[in-house]
Length: 200
Image (cartoon, rainbow, N blue to C red; front, side, top):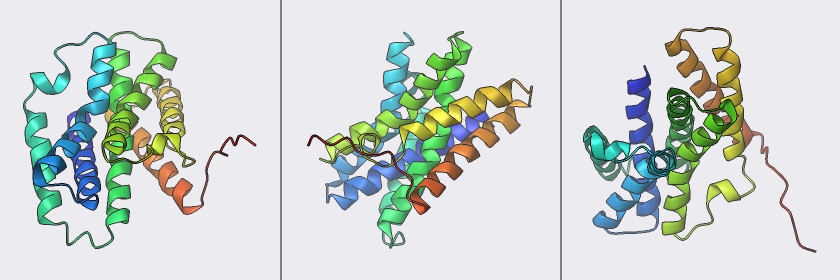
């Protein structure tokens, strides 16, 4: 289940990056680069911080294949995504849920404190999108009013609560990712957001 979620998250973020780049009318090389950094940016930063080098995607070439497939699918079916903003949001949300789990698991595997694991999960999920938005000349979603990183933190808390209940790993991963995805969908639907701090 964990390996499957990893592949799904990587492809979802790659497609999210590709759709964003196409929305900015970049050329095919630019679209591929944005897809790539969106998919692996957060994980690369995480691996460097925990001293895991070479970073994950350099050791396992499947990530390059998965990102390439996501890039090609986004290109081929771009006209099917007639509501580009909705498609981008859905892919981004799936990636958010899955990559939070991956960061949590990496922290647990090296014996880090749960709070640090949650920070790693949030970083893994969010910073590929931060790099994507900066390269596409957008204010990153994580820094805007929309609830984004907060959802990853809540998902991490849910993960450790459920983990105390000794659930099967597959159930734990699936439940946590669904919680994160569901909260994000509800946050957008019901317009939940953190108030902006204004300098008056």
